[in-house]
Image 1 (cartoon, rainbow over the protein chains, first blue to last red):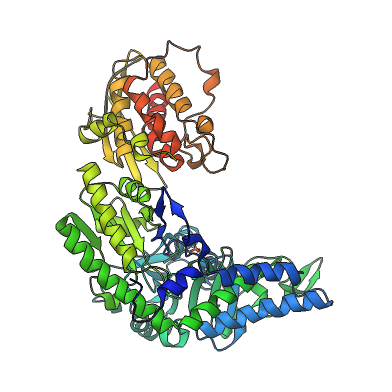
Image 2 (spheres, rainbow over the protein chains, first blue to last red; image 1 turned 90 degrees about the vertical axis):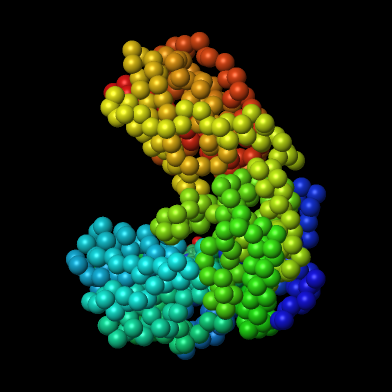
Length: 413
Length: 173
Ligand SMILES: Cc1ncc(COP(=O)(O)O)c(C=O)c1O
C-alpha cells in the first residue's frame, strides 16, 4: 500500500518511532501534521547526541565544546538558509516559531514604517498568527487593514487586487492555507505588491514543510517558517528577510547576545541576524531542525510534493465515493493547487464529535476553527474536522479515515 | 481506556437531537449573555428571565458539539423554575462533578475545567456564597459524568454553566 510516485513510505514510517504504537487497540493513524509533524529518529538522535557530547552556550565560551556548539548552531542556520533559497545564512533569524517571526516583522519593521492611515493588506484566509499582530498595530497606531477576499473555490479573489494594493505598504499572505490547503500565487501577488510600492511577507508555515521553497522565486521580502511542522522540534522557527531590510530594522527583544556594547546610558546592537536573537537561543532545537532539513533534502522536496498530490487525489476520490454529498470538503478540489489538508464537515455533526469517534479508530485529526476564525466565518462553518497528510502517510491511512467516518455517521445518524 | 459509550450516553444524544428550551426571549425583560469556548469556537447565547429571585424562564441559542448542546439543554430543564439560590447550588454541584480529580489524571492542562483560564469563568468565591440552598438533584445531568474521562471535552460541558453563572450575576445587578 505504500506505493507512491516519490517516496518509499514503508521505509519512512520506520524512521518515526511514534507511529509504531496502538491507540484504543488500533494502529495510530496520524493525520494532523498541519498542526505539528512527527519527528524522525534522525532528528531525535541529532539532538540527543548534541546534548551528550557538545552542549555549551553559544557565541561566548572560547573552549572547545562551546566552539563546537556555536559551529553546529550556525551550521543549522546555513542549512535552513540553503533549504529556502536564501542568499546568505545571516538572512535567517531564529525565533521560537512562525508566530514570533511574524511578530518580529510587525514590531520591528512595522513600528518603524507604519503609522496612522498606512495600509497593510492581508487575506481572509490568514492564520491568527498573521492577523493578530497586525490588528494590534491597527489598534495602537491606526494602521488601516485591507483584506483580499476569497472565491467560492477557496482561492484568493485577485480580481480587485490593484485597487486593494493602492497605497499599501505591506502585504501579508499565507503561502499555503492551513485550513483549505490552497497554494496561493505568492509570486503573482508579490509582483503586483512591489509595483504598488509594498513589501511582501509570506507566512510559509505550511509551505516550507511541503513544497520546494525558494525565497527568490516566491518574490517575497519576509518569510516566516516554523520548525515543528517540518519534522523539527518545537521551539524553533523564525524569519527570513532580505539582509538590507534586516540591517535597517531596530532590534525586537533586548538582552544578552544581541549587543556589541552596553553602557549605563545606552547600547549598540550587534550585526544581523544576532541583533534579533536576544538571550540564549534554542541550540539543540536548531541542531534538530538542521537534521530535519537534511532528512527532507535527502527525500527531495519534489518527491515530497508528488507524494502529497497522490494522497490528496486519492483522498478526494475515496471520500467522495464513500460519503458523497454528506461530506463537504472545503477549499480547492484541484490537487495541483491544494496541499495535503482536508477540512471536512460531515452532515451537521460537530467536528468535536467527529474527531472523538475517529480517535476511537486510532485516527488523529484536528477539530475546531484552526486558528482562522475569520476564514471559518467566510466558509459559514463553526468548525471543521481537518485531516492533513505528510511523508509518513499512505493510502491505507486514508482508507482507515474513510471507514472511520462511516462509524461517525452510524453513531450520530 | 474510556470508551465512547462512557461519553455519549443515550440521554445525552437525546438532548442533542431534541434540545429543550431552544430559542430566544424578549430582551428586556430577559437578560442576554454570551459564552464562548475559545478552543473550538463553540458559542452559546442564553436568555434568562429572573423574577422574584426565581428563574422564571430561560432559552438557549448558539452552536456547538453534542456535549455542549446537550449539557445546555439539560441545564435549562434543570434550572427552569428554580430559585436563584438553587440554580447557583446546581452550578456548584455540576462543576464539582466536572472537576478532574476523580479521573485520576496527573497531567496539567485539564485544570479544573471550569473555564476560568479563558476569563469566561464565574465570579469565583463560590465557597462564600449564601449558605447553600438545598441542592436540587442532578438527575439526567449525571449522564455527563463520563465527560471527565475526556479532559478536553470538559470545557464543552461547562460552557453553558459558566454562561448561566454570568447571567445570574447580571440579572442580580
Ligand atoms: C499558516 C500558518 N501560519 C502560522 C502558524 C503558526 O505556527 P506556530 O504556531 O508554529 O508559530 C501556523 C500553524 O499553526 C499556520 O498553519
